[in-house]
Image (cartoon, rainbow, N blue to C red; front, side, top):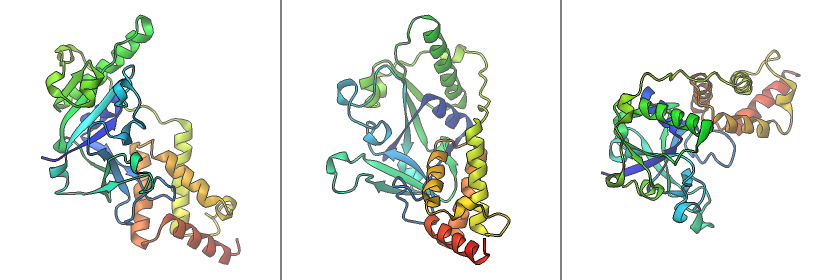
Length: 284
């Protein structure tokens, strides 16, 4: 079985396991991060072909040069690439290009038309490193929060391993895991999603309005900023920032934009140019 590894945060891993869903990243924008070549599959999940791949942690420093800092919690989701490849395309990506051979992050992207994909059927195990918690109220709060997230994973039925040594975690050496029995003793956990922040709500509404304009420019939905020379850049920044939100409503907005790209077979840049040209003809 070929494996892939998705690096994430404990809270996100808990929600993935609980909801049985990966919220994918939108890759159809104009920024350098969006290396998608196909206009048909605008969403992706970043993974690595090795547990300690550079893509997830942004460098090779840390404990023993492995890149995982021992004072922070870390999560690796072990995926069955053989099963995934039955339903999705998996594409190797070198973000830095051939000129920077030493910077290869061993990244492989699972690409999709949709903004989400099933999770549990592809997850072999979730590997969790929990650091020593600080003394006092701060440490007590961090420990309580971490335990709650582990309880969510435990309740989902997904296999998981907990590590006390960050080096064992970096190797995903389950034989060195130290799984305790405390998750089964915890009570109910409040797993309701956090309310979106005000800037996220504004950003979501802005992307939705722009998508409507790109689909059908009219006198009523054309705003002056849409006609500026740097609009494409600012819209690209919106799309880049939206990649981190991944709420259900935000993903729905990006799904609509992706469907427009697929329907027209045009890039974001082409869609913006066409909409600006049509708006000028309307004597905006």
